[in-house]
Image 1 (spheres, rainbow, N blue to C red):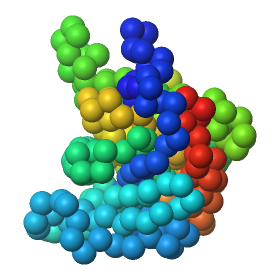
Image 2: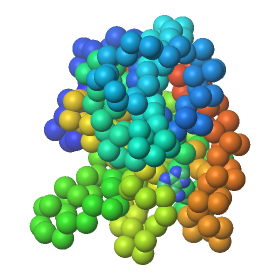
Image 3: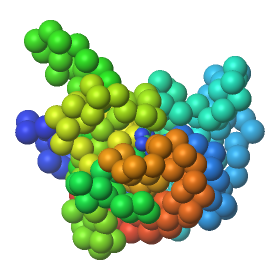
Image 4: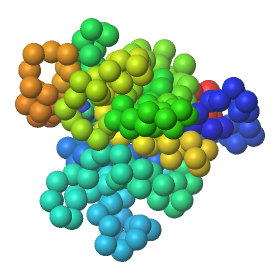
Length: 261
Ligand code: ADE
């Protein structure tokens, strides 16, 4: 089953009928990842299969019937801050799929939200679609490639059971938003804005692994507070909400097949 459910893609395959056993969770920031590592008592792998010298960190462990691999892209070697953004998230998603052959990828993290489209701080969203808002290529067809819109793997039972909001996600490599970004986000019909989702979706689609996106709102993009300030102010509280949501999602997935999500 592809991460993107294109109209000509098969709706189910035999692997969809086996209970999910291997999950890769991609989380960009240490503050977001650590509570999940603690909750599932995951252990850092000192001999991860990643190339020598990269900052990428693998935490792993078992939870009920699931093998969990949480991948954090680590600290940027030059600046020492979390390796947020599309490049690192695409690289670790690729490397993790190659190494761990997951049945499912979960990209979890924080996001900005538009109050005009129903988002509030602390809300948890499951993304129905992911697209880029900062890859403008105004040449026919390249424009569509730049936007790179992909459907996330649909999880109607999960969103119903956990009572989660569903909306479109727009991804770019900046925390702030230029007027051009804003027009593209509006064109993408997005309610939430992050810095990784569409990149993870791109790799998952290339390698035909279903991917879902769990995003917790730290800041209101169309509010009156400066984004960076509001983000930092709410980060700790919202990561608790994110961690709870990830726990509920993992609990729901345990014992189910892909087609039952
Ligand atoms: N992560 C949290 N808030 C964000 C925002 N406003 N834009 C992009 N990524 C974010």
